[in-house]
Image 1 (cartoon, rainbow, N blue to C red):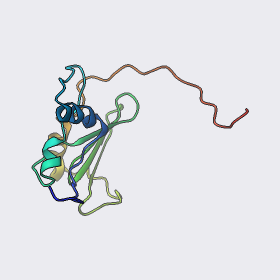
Image 2 (image 1 turned 90 degrees about the vertical axis):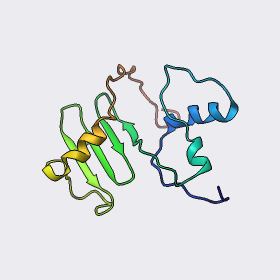
Image 3 (image 1 turned 180 degrees about the vertical axis):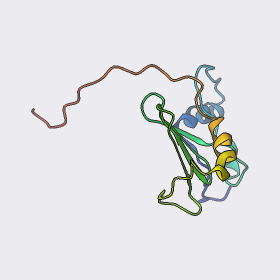
Amino acid sequence: MEPGSRCDAPVNLLDLYPTLCELAGLPLRDELEGTSLVPLLGEPDAKWDRPSLTTYGRGNHALRDARYRYLRYADGSEELYDHQSDPHEWHNLAGDTRYQAVKVRLAKWLPKTDAENGPRVKYRWWPGK
């Protein structure tokens, strides 16, 4: 890889732990998720077919691949955006049958189970109050 190279593959923070373990020659813990980014470090243009997963609250997930962002909410509603033609996400394509295969392809990466909600924490936003 050339210094200053750029990799456009969608990745997330879950991938840091397995990446660091591989680079350090340490074993992985089976219960943790993520995929090592070492192949992308060596070859930024390497094939990467895993979308990046973001979760916001229980049952609300977004998947982003090189072209699309697919969201599925806890209530079953969906959004799908084509970042190639709609980078600002103005046009939800989820109801368009022409994109059914895209939704199915991305949905296979949705979590099979959701973690329990954590405890609610009351934050103090203003010093001294």
